[in-house]
Image (cartoon, rainbow, N blue to C red; front, side, top):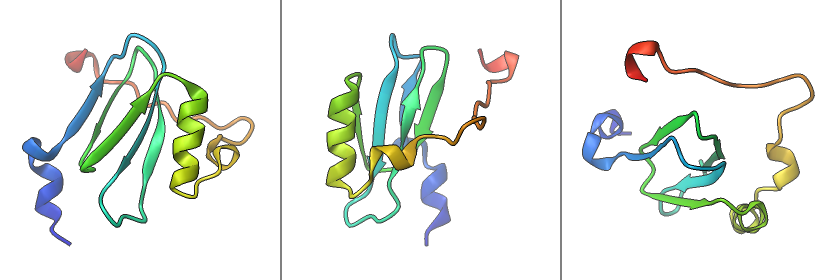
Length: 92
C-alpha cells in the first residue's frame, strides 16, 4: 500500500461545518473498506477515499449503505458509547 497517498492534499475530500447533519459514505473502486458516518454542523471530516457520497436525508443514506452491504442498524453506536473528537482551538 502506498501510504503517501493519504498525505496528498490533492486527493483529500473534506466536509467542513455543514449547515445541517450530513451523512457520508466514502469508498474507492473495488473497495471493501468503506468509511461512513455523520458530520454535525460543529464538525469537520477529511478522507482520502476517491468517492464520497453525501446526503442530509437519513433514508437515502440507509439505502446507499445497503448498496455496500452495510446494515444501518450495525452502524449505530452501542448504548453509552460515543466518538467525538473536537478540534483544537487554534483550528476553529
